[in-house]
Image 1 (cartoon, rainbow, N blue to C red):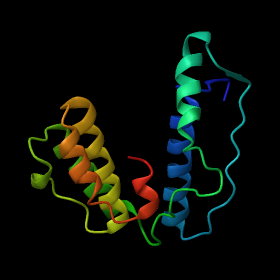
Image 2: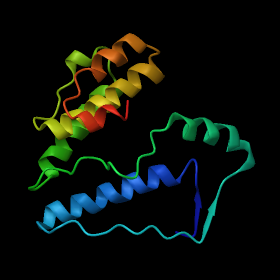
Image 3: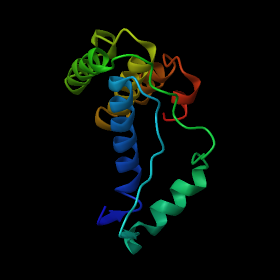
Image 4: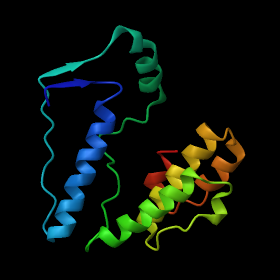
Length: 144
């Protein structure tokens, strides 16, 4: 990358790029290779210093426990189910009405989105907590 904001951009870019890497590996039925992120200008703006300190103070930045691996097999049917759930979550009145993907990994990704929308967009922390309790993979609970 030519330039990357270490606070706002990097975490999102690494997630997106490694998800694309896993989608490609699963589609081709090959082992997942290494991910190397190279940046010409990795920077942190002064105005984000307090937010970075708060984020780092949370202590959730493990380099030991990565996300759980994407299930083996062609992922595209699951991606379609996740995109359908995501569209329903955007228009969500109640999370119970959302059609979750059949596979637990993909359903948990939808639950993470649902909990985030309930907490940040609808300001319903109780609903977000209820959705969070439905997550089946322990390592995904850390993202809530």
